[in-house]
Amino acid sequence: YPETIKIYREFLEKYSEYQGKELEEVYYLLGQAYLRSEKYKQAEEVFYNLLFFFPGFELASEVKYYNALNLFKENKYEEAIVQLKDLISEAEI
Image 1 (cartoon, helix red, strand yellow):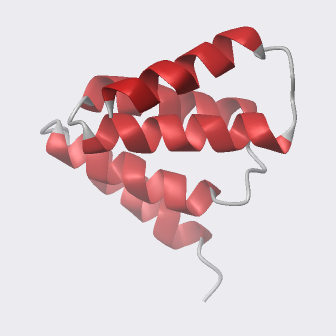
Image 2 (image 1 turned 180 degrees about the horizontal axis):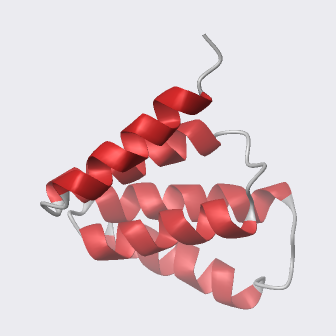
């Protein structure tokens, strides 16, 4: 994933002013790459930024789930539980 992370970061630096769907997707993919590379702090930051700057992102629920998983892997259990409870309360069941 190192090369993938490098490409996504370069894209975000170059097109940070752009607000299209592609930028949302790059944030999402970058967060996934960090998570799979076990770079949990970086993944947490990317997922937070994604949800902050793009609250209407179509995969926001999935991002919240992955962020909770990420927090769990960082041994931030209480924060992970809060994130999962928020996700459950938002679910349309």
